[in-house]
Picture 1: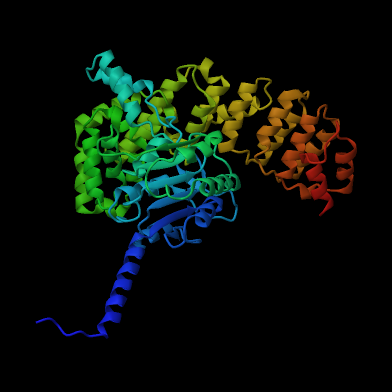
Picture 2: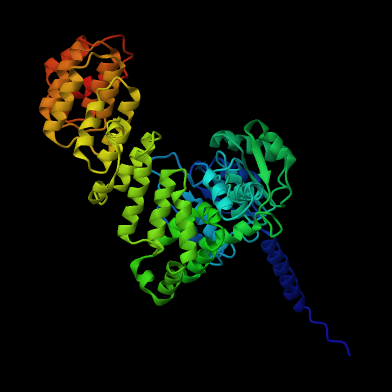
Length: 555
């Protein structure tokens, strides 16, 4: 028997059907996530053009909050399209050109989100990513194997041909180009748009986007299909498109290695177990992971290092004599002194070197440098940096350098960084040298070891004042520009030099030093008059001399 007819049931059926339609409409609605660390022009172009009933916009950046990306993960938002707007430094982060802005987007943080299950939804259903920043898809390698990598492979028993082939393979896997990093972060995303070189500024990019979306419609957005029309609109600005990595991609294995460092689901001891496995491979590969190894070991605090699981993992590395020998042999053969020093420091963290051993390794490195002629300002900078706390000065007696080489300014600068008083005197004399190279070494040294002694400063200043002008005197003055001089006698010496200077360059250099100094101690109407009436050449009103005059007058 059929059920009786109930007229009041029809409105309920209709309501249920309507609710189902609404639910489906809501389910079909797509989400455009935006990360706006600079201009909002690109975001607004999409917002104005995409149908409001079909698209929801979610800004992931929370102003004033440093952990905004992690906060976005906790909301459970799932993005169909991601639009990132910001200047890009070519490898490390997106940032703003607005001084008051504090938000930025590190690529390391993007890797963490991509590799970890702590944020399963944010990138999981992305179809398209739009990267509005310079060089976001630049294919140029940011890292490349150096010569010692090939040498280490030959020492390990590989033929030169095999070593060359393996070096090329390492170069491809570890290129760390912007394009590679974005493909790694946005795994399986069908279309990643960016720029292979300079990108248009926000207002220009927003205008081009608006024209494209008005002329071509919005049906392609969010489909994952590459838009040839969009690429055509930005063709003058080198827009490029690439897919994210897939499991079949040649770089998939490299991504798995990277995620061993970035995945925050992994406990520290698990990450260290991977590090140990990595150190058992050819040392050349561990060398390519050097920055990540440094960041990981530096992130472990004393509490973590003392926990039994982490201590056991570190102990396993420390006791691996084979890995230690290969690693130190590689480090000692490094072409770059800076890389060698970093590897030595990391060896100490691994427990392979004691503090005394580490200092001995660094002395060995400096002795090898001082025995040759290849010291550059970079080695001087490194020596001063490594000895910033004076820890290497106790090893100075173990430095071996011939008297002839020790007299060279380059060698003297290294020795001075390591605490030699005699070498410091030679470097300070080099400030007034006619050799531009000698002055460069002195400048690098003084950036680390400024003239703090008043008598020493006065002596140097007297030598500079006695110079015969020209470019050498300008270089010597520029070497003092970083000092914020407060000694009235030295400042007065500069004021006396100004009216007798024989070039605009010398006068401008003097003004530059005074601007960074306690010039108020010598400021007077007479000095202002001298600055104005005894200046050489015709100034446009905007150089250092004009700025100094205005500041002295405003006192």
